Length: 300
Picture (cartoon, rainbow, N blue to C red):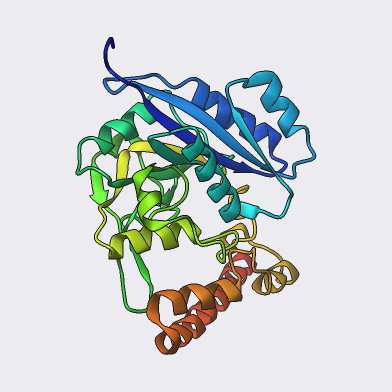
């Protein structure tokens, strides 16, 4: 590798009181094997007011990790932005966004980096995500299109079982999930950071959708796989069967995946005030319908 410069990759991980899962994620980063494109991983952990010994664990076990301490009110989006700013200060060439519950193989980073260099420069590359538990289930497979009502068409049905040996190749994706997105640093210099009005959910969807609409190349890699803990990720989601009380409380919580405020803001932002309100009402009705249908399914 003499004479070949390393690509500096800032791996941004927001976290709050998940010392155990975070430890496993950092172990995966530490175990990455380099390939034809040499790289240096720089873990950037944004600790949002954790009280479970997270910071002490990082300092004791992962001395090369950068720690950004937040005050407990950053939540996901502001944490990601704080991580990007630190990565810029560290002169990183790329940012890789990760959730603290993810695990991945030792060839994951070299694979997604190779995919980046196989397509047009300054592309955004996302990862296919599967459940950690067996049988493997799809949690994100990429989106082929988004219609006028902001309905996403997934390449593979969410939570369908899959044989990961059959996963390979890349597809264009209109939006991406935040679980394993490789960004060239230049994209933030051009487009700015994540929208902090989307406090906890949809900010990565918003950013990649904006990129797609600006003509940027956005891809989903089936070669680069991340595995998520479905119970930890989006704990308030309908597929995790929240109680009636928890569900209805989540509708008014702007940090919830079910937040009506989030749905209204996102819809108006991408479809304008008139169409946006109409779409938001349809989507809010859809959230209610899915919740009730899930409860009826469980009851029977």
